[in-house]
Length: 122
Length: 190
Image 1: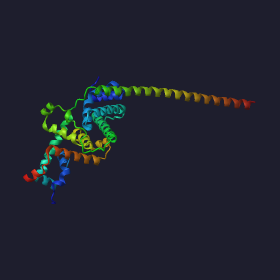
Image 2: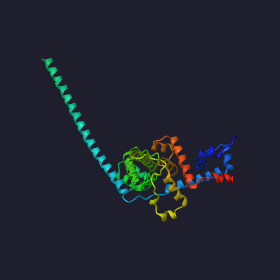
Image 3: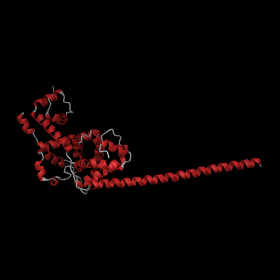
Image 4: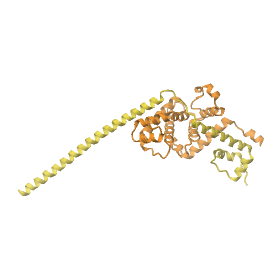
């Protein structure tokens, strides 16, 4: 079995402490016999526990942040409402144009048809 | 007004502005905490929080609900923080030395509170503040907020392998700063 050095395991010990790493048999035997590597694993476990516990710690911002955030959301909401209003009007305008154009085209067709019939009759 | 986050999210997605405002009230301190941990100073953290909620508001309809709302918000916050740090680096007149701490926040802390706090946690806060921003971001997002590597990489704009390398380096630096180098001691004892 090849000799395993502490340096070879440097990348794996934190993952081991996290419970994610998978050490090979030779690596496990080394850690079981090496106080330095064992100490590193213990230190990583303490570090990771301390980091995880920070999740429940909350820092209180200085007063005013909540009001500022709500105000900016309100402004964004107003802009969105105005944008929707304008989009709605634009759609109505374009629809109106399209309807007028279609009506005009239909009228032109009717006129052309009548004119042709008159010529044929005449 | 429902205070369950899932109910608030559903209502906000349906256009209920009050529901979104309530989501902000429920989450803004934890969002600020994350932003502060990533950015390192209060003013910039506040800017990041505002930007994060604006982006959440505009993008809420795209939130599929396959992750927790808070996780989704944390990802947005991380992305905003990364953008902010990138902008700050470009506007500096001197080259950004990533070996320097981003900000010394220790003077902001109440000495009495520090005296009462667990020693390891206090030293951990200092050690995190001493990390370069690009390493601190990864280790905070992974080890404090449990974001997966692919999410961290996506929000910070780096590859997954780069995220893992930075995580390893950050953990190594933190361990050394908190516990010192035991190489000689353990070798002699072994």
